[in-house]
Amino acid sequence: MKNKKLILFICIVLVIIAGGGIGVTALLFNHPFNVSKPTFIYIDENDNTDSVLVKLETQLNASTLTGFKMLIRLNGYTVRTGAYRLAAEQNTLTAYRLLSHGHQTPVKLIVPSVRTIGQLSRTVARQIMADSASISTLLTDSLYCDSLGYTRETIASLFLPNTYEVYWNMTAQGFIARMQKEHARFWDKNRRAKASEIGLTPTEVSTLASIVEEETANRAEKPTIAGLYLNRLRIGMPLQADPTVKFALQDFGLKRILYKHLETESAYNTYKHPGLPPGPIRIPSIEGIESVLNYAPHNYLYMCAKEDFSGTHNFAATLAEHQVNARRYQAALNRMR
Image (cartoon, rainbow, N blue to C red):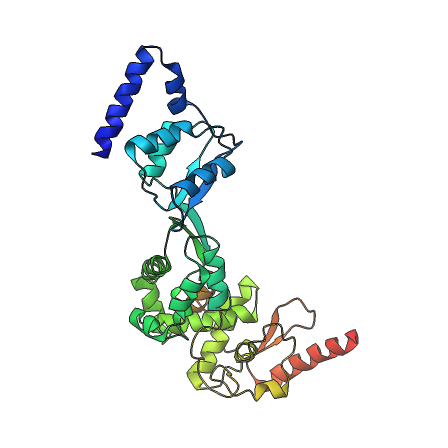
């Protein structure tokens, strides 16, 4: 019915044009938006017709919306949420059809590598319509996580830091559903086979990758550190990873791990509890995950920060070799005092 009305309206306009009704024509085919470049307007679930008109006027500096209002009166307008890209060259009729038909423009969604679900929720919410509370509420709900095949501790392994093309009016549930699809696409038969070969599940790979990434930002070292921790897991040796202690304390700015910190009672404290922690201590990057799946084979069991403070490490196969490296690093620290 609405389409018939629009066709009728256009026919009337054409008749008016033929009769010299240039004023009415201008209302429909003018270019009302005074913007120097294509601009997005974001229409959310709280918007109504009036608020959409206000956004067109204030955000796109519309010179007149008379033609737009005329189209609404004749053909109606149902508010459709989304991100709409409008440019100066668009006329009133094309803008009306864009908004009324819900022809929104995809936007870029950057899923970051962060330490907590709260940080993830806030970062994602700044990029889509869903708010941080709705995302966080789902991801911290034990029953909901269980329905996805995760726990509150392992849910971070669902996410793969990357840039995705999405529609802005994505809900919290829609966001998580999209991440499930991306996770399934990433964890193909080849990667699952590699994980199985080293005796880990995809979630455990992500957990180990999160520790590796907290240990170093050096790309070349990541496979070596992954191999070191895999060596420890194979022989039942505690990981003794300092980043897991920081996570247990939720003190990510801690500069030095002291003996008192090692006594922290937490399942994440890999000094007290052998094996992997209950889940990732951050959302690991794809590079971090690949460093575990393609770890460097060697016999190292120990590592110590290099005495040149480069952020890289000296590796050792025996405790005696490790103690030599540790003394060099301690001496370098003492010289700085």
